[in-house]
Length: 414
Figure 1: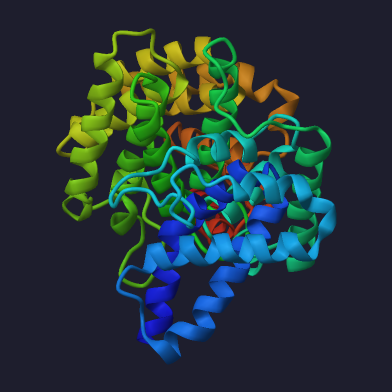
Figure 2: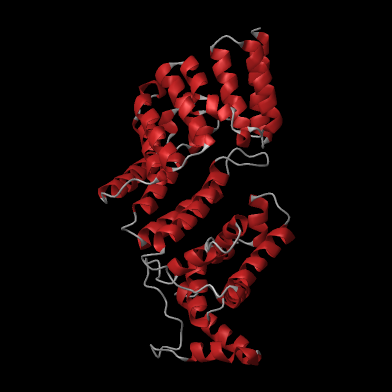
C-alpha cells in the first residue's frame, strides 16, 4: 500500500511534465497521454515487485521514451513521430528530464493547449484535470457527479478536436497571450470554485479540487512572473482556501463567514495569498478582475473580526469589479457589502437591477440574500417566501437544509 501511494504521488507530480514532453516531441496529445498512461501502469506492476527506483522521475522519462518508440514501430503510419523521437539532441537515449524542483518548460504550452478556446468550457476543465492534474477519468467524474463514460467521451472528443484543428503545442506569442491567458485563468478558477463551493451533491467543499486548482495556478504564475492576473488568481484562491477549516462546524454543519472562528483560518495560506497579491500589485499594471477579487479577499483576511472588516473599501472594490467584469453576481455580492456598510434598506435598493435580471431567476443566492435583508427589515413573511424559493433552487442538500431552516425561523417571527 505504501508503494502504491508513492507511485500515485510521483505520478501526480510528474504526469503533466511527462505528457508535455512527449506531446512536444510527437506533436500528438492523444498519443502522448496514452504512452504516459502505459508508463504509469507499468510502474504499478513493477515497482511493488522490484522496489521503487532510486530516481523515480528518471525511470518514468526513460521508460516513456522506449515505450513511445516501441508503439511507433508497431504503428507504421506514425513514421514522422518516430523520426522526431529518434532525433535525440542530447544523445542521452532518454527524454530530457526536468531539473529537480523545476516545473519544466513543456508544461506551459500544455496548459494553453488544454484550455484552448476551440474546446467547450466543460471539455477544457476535464482535459486540464486529466493531463495537468493527473486525475483519472473516474476521479473527474466523481468530482462533477457525471457518469464516467460521459467524462471519458468528453476528454476523447477534446483531444480529437485539438488534433483536427491542428492546435500547435506552443505558448502563445505576446500579441495573443492576453486573450489566451484569460481562458486559462477561467478554467483554473472554475476548478477551484467547484471545490470551494460545490455546485452539486452533498458536500459543502471539495478540497481536492480546490488544492489541484491552486497547484495549477502556482505553476502558471511561476511560468509567467510578469503577468499580474496570474499572481492575482493565486492570491484569490489561497486567501479563500485559508478559510476551509472554519467553514464547517464540529458536526459538519456549514458555517458562514460572519460566524467563522478566524483562529481556525490557515495563516500560512493567508500569508502566501497576501504575498501573491503584493506581487501582482508590484507589477504596476492596471488591476484585472482576479486581482480585484483578491483585494476583496485580502480585506477579509486582514480583519481581526467580522465587525472589523472595512466594508466601505469592499464596496468600492466591487464597484471596480463591476466595471471590469459586469455581472449580476458581482452586483449581488456588492449588495451584501452595502448591507454591512450602509444597512439593509440601502442593500435592498442596490439589489433592484439584480432582481430585474432574468439570468438570476434560477440563482438560489439571490433569494438567500433577499431573505436575509427582508428579515433584517422585519418583513418576515416575505423573507420566508424568498428563502423557501431559494431552497428549491439550491444545488446541494446542505444548502437546501440551511435555507429551509432560515425560512422556518422567519416564519416563526411573523
